[in-house]
Image (cartoon, rainbow, N blue to C red):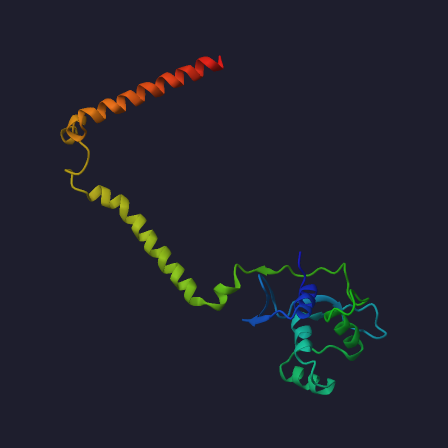
Amino acid sequence: MADPLSLLRQYNINKKEIIERDGQIIFGEFSWPKNVKTNYLKWSGKNVARKEYYTLECLLFLLKNLSVIHPVYIRRADAEKIPVVRRPDRKELLAYLNGETASCPAINKSAHFELPTQIKRSTDYDEPESIAKKRRFEDTHLQKVGEKPSARLDAPKEESLTVYNIKSLSEVMSVEKIAEIKAKCLANKRNAIKGICAKS
């Protein structure tokens, strides 16, 4: 199952678009709340027993602000009320997120992480018109299906099949055509009987 840290790394390396919408961070068909904890441990200095993890929003904000110096990054994060990546973690974390290293000691592989919400298609999110069109089509289709049984009940009795409006076969087809159909039926019966006898 996908976890937010490895997907963030994959999308960053491949330069794919990461969408932020309605408090969610979306990677293609997977979505997490922006404050979901990743399995990347924060540097804790001497207090090794205390385990805190960076949030997905925090790591994404760092990637978006790589072009600025650390003090400016801290001021921007503070203005948006986003926790910052501590300076001792920055070098190893960026090496991992940029694909320079395959792993690093701060990643807790046994940490539990929140499962993502699965999104059907990103195009449905980007194009609300297509959803509206689909709904309109479905509603119209449902109305037509709903009308059929009631239309049959409301139909005049003349249209329904009765003994009086059955036409004879000779009225519909010529005698030659009827004889031709009879001959075909007999030939099919003989072939079917031969096939059964051959099997036994």
